[in-house]
Length: 278
Ligand SMILES: C[S@@+](CC[C@H](N)C(=O)[O-])C[C@H]1O[C@@H](n2cnc3c(N)ncnc32)[C@H](O)[C@@H]1O
Image 1 (cartoon, protein in one colour):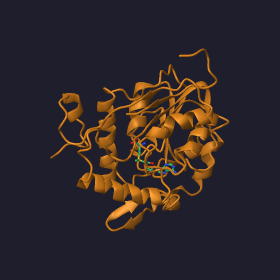
Image 2 (cartoon, protein in one colour; image 1 turned 180 degrees about the horizontal axis):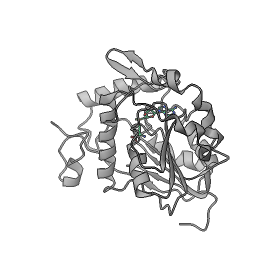
Image 3 (tube, helix red, strand yellow; image 1 turned 180 degrees about the vertical axis):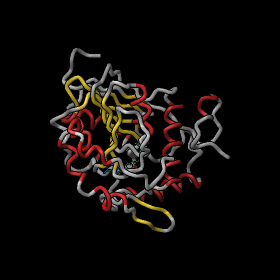
Image 4 (spheres, helix red, strand yellow; image 1 turned 120 degrees about the vertical axis):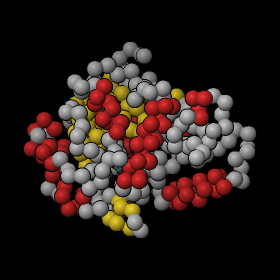
């Protein structure tokens, strides 16, 4: 740690039911301040009437801005990736050296599974999880609230900043991650932390054995399509530079490998649930 830097952060390279009834009680909860008021009027129809296409369904708020579904099988996938991250990080929910944070936000929280774990671990902390989709469970720790918000739009958190901002697995999700990190800088308290856990979306091999494989083709086609649509698909290699650009100091980067299938010798590396061969 350095001596009281202006802002600190670390970078790391590491089924909720759908159509749940939205907890609108926060609309009248003054402890969350004005930042929530802009969602309250339109929560019901413009947020919950999901777009249905080809047997899947998609978020309605800011319809079309995120390309992946928000249905049960997608939520299962997100929860599985959460388990993958926990295994990768030896069951640590985060890596930043935070101490007694008062106010924490999980950006694009998905099913909210990270926020729930964090809120359980820190019962005295006010935790917010925000997402375009209200796909989070209603039965959550009392110190946790979920809100519907677009983190790529101007946000109103600056006047009530956070001790810790967490964002994970936003590859293929956000267009301008650099801008988002700059926003985070404005919304984190001096001495607070920002943690991004994200990927270099494309798969690769150190020995070249991946070249020309169907897996490589899959990534080139699918991730290439996302890139053409303007999404950031490989944030991980650029995070450090973007953190510096935003003004953060005391930057930590930790890199982790996630092997496909069961080839590694290290038993820790073959146990990742998402990429096992079945
Ligand atoms: C790949 S998931 C990651 C979920 C979660 N961070 C995790 O690690 O489990 C991406 C999430 O970002 C949300 N999302 C996409 N664009 C967003 C935006 N502009 N503002 C807020 N949430 C967004 C999606 O609804 C989805 O739940």
